[in-house]
Amino acid sequence: MLNLAVPTDDGWFDRVRDHLDVILVDHCHLEKRAASNALNMIFRYTGKDSILRELSDVVQEEMEHFVMCLDLLEARDIKFIRLKPSPYAAKLKESIERQEPKAFLDQLLMAALIEARSCERFKILGDELEDIDPELSAFYKDLVVSEARHHMLYTNIARQFYPADEVKERLSELAAIEADAVASCTDAPRLHSF
Image (cartoon, rainbow, N blue to C red):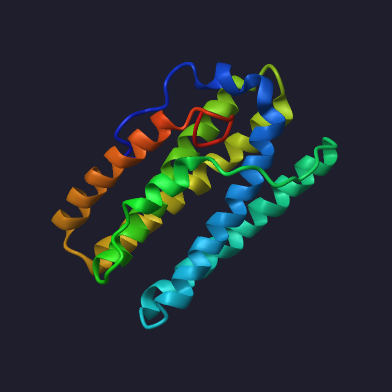
């Protein structure tokens, strides 16, 4: 369902367990970026009226998640600091076509894959934190559904504008690139790497 080429390895949670403060800060930044990405698509593809409301809903929901993250950071006395970005997003961006009409397809599918990875990692955090930090576990379990929905929304929008076979083939290609990006980004604890 999530179209990920490779699942997160079994040791990921053990590697981030001692860095949950950083993971929360990173998560907060990611929600802000997800909202910005959807908003940028609204600006860039204004003529595609059928997607504007759907993307507006994504912007609003991502900003709600951003505020939830801010609240959680504040409650835990964790400062929302700037983090050196993981190379994950840069590696994905390198693979996106620059020329239309393929640029739109790639932006949609890459956003779908990022949402899919978030969904998968949130589920891991929700499950693994159940006995360690029930509040944080519940927070992540609540977000799993919306991340999966965003993944499906982006792939469904792609199918509105491109043939299903083209979407499937490109999604598979980009999923392999996403899997390589996850595997190669091991320098710092982040939600989409380490």
